[in-house]
Length: 171
Image (tube, rainbow, N blue to C red; front, side):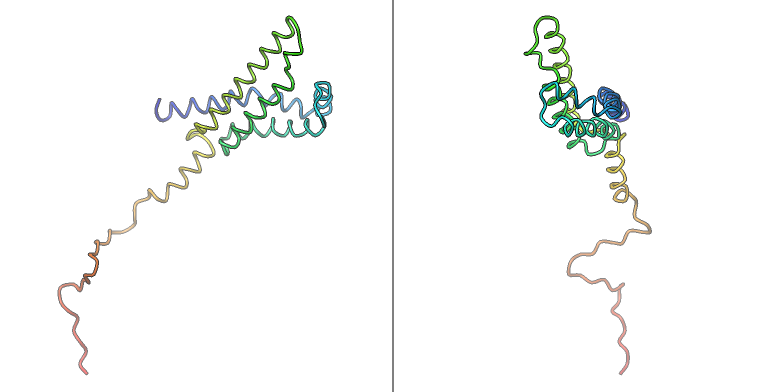
């Protein structure tokens, strides 16, 4: 894939990754205390602080992914967040039967999402992003043609005088 097709696929990928987390993040932001109760039930220490931090990451992280802001940091942070929350919220090893299978499926799906965030961190967001816009804006002055005619190159140590030596003033 080249050019705009690749940038379109990267944009669609960023939107899909963000859509996996942003709606849940907004819902949790509207009920942080309920999410803290869920974390406390899972045995999480300091559930209120973890719930607040998780809501911040789960809302602003996907927004940064959509925009393509700081892809390496955002991708690595989101991968760590998703993997950590998956292990905390889906402990299939504590379940039995159908519940264990369901929790294992959720855990593996979240780990797959974490892998997608790692790939995003390594490949970058593409040209249709904040980073792509900044890269193009920074490179634009360097690509602009010089104004006026180009000055001839000088050879080192040789001074051009226009053909004749300048006349000396009479003393």
